Image 1: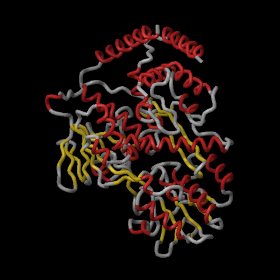
Image 2 (image 1 turned 180 degrees about the horizontal axis):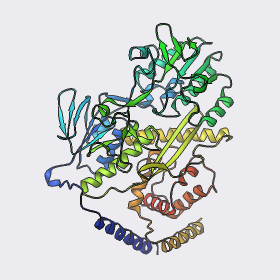
Image 3 (image 1 turned 135 degrees about the vertical axis):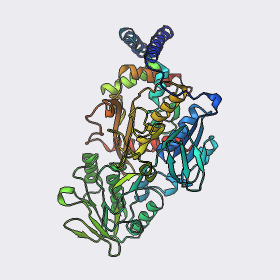
Image 4 (image 1 turned 135 degrees about the horizontal axis):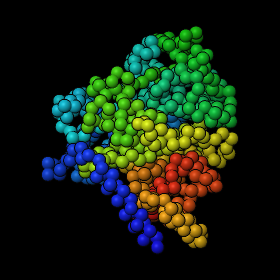
Length: 429
Length: 102
């Protein structure tokens, strides 16, 4: 009974799909296997690039996938705030590319320095020139140095951003460990759009949790360039429940935005006030990674417009852009988003290789935030393509509600760990 | 338990007949499931706290997803995720995960 119905339904579905195909012009390039394996070059070995490379390799091992990543290890921004709070070590969030290589992906540790969209080549800093049929650009973010006066690359050695995980995360953790009880920690947030909208507030939470445990006379001050922030009621509820009185926030309307810093005197200044904290974490404004800017993929906007179904650049055909570097409608800049976008893009590349039309699917983003080791909450979104952009299917009540039991928040923390284990296994396992 | 599954399955089949083009299609489900595996593991094989979906009973899984969507079971996340999908999509997801060897 079941089988019969399913077969019937599937046949009807296939018939519909075929009719759709017949109506569409056969405009797609057909890359016949006789011409050799299709070549996909991926720039950037983070959540977007690595997920895409593994997705293609798992679905069609016949595709030649090259991943260009300058670093030999990757520390994830997700879960890096846990390192700052002393919940786990940097090693727990750091991965090598050994399993990526073992899976048959050609990983080149170099920097992509130029893209030629006409010749379809990528030039590496080391001098190599790689030809591609499809190019995926997933370079993440870079910082807009100078947007905060006095905050340049040298200043990050005194006032870490720790917004690209790795040595900066370790430096900020060392500073927090070395700080005497009674000190003030400042976190300066950027104006949007920036990587991980709830990230600065999760960071404030886990540092406050650490201070509460180990240095209870200390304070944490958020100098905020935003008036309101992601999951605000949930964060503020957690702060009151777990470590009341430690976190203070100056919103944008209270002159919270940091305008300049002086690392030599540890001074952090807003339009009206100067602060001299013991530890200063400055998260500067951001834009797409340099290779995307150099290739003109951002059209001067700082981030890159994409086709909402395929993630193909609206500037250059056969170049796809993923993750934090994109303008992806309602999707936030997150590792989860980049991973989901990689699958949509991967499916589109597989369709193009097969000469099929790409089919829109639904995308998900879940951002878990920890407020302590046993207390987490999330924002969960399902997205669909509508009116030429990526929209929420449901706008309302996307965040876990306030007023839940400690048990629910503990269960959520368990799911956050499970998510991290599964998504990193998908990329690096 | 067995009765419940059959009941759901019957409901599902009536739904299938009523909606032209409706297909509990595992292939469509596989593409939709790409988004689920970020939490539930590749092909729905999750070793951790997030439930494994690979090899689950098709009707039972559909039933569970509908219950999340309608808010009739307590959940931390899935009640909000399930709202984002049509019955057709939930059926395709259930068909796909049921088809995967655990």
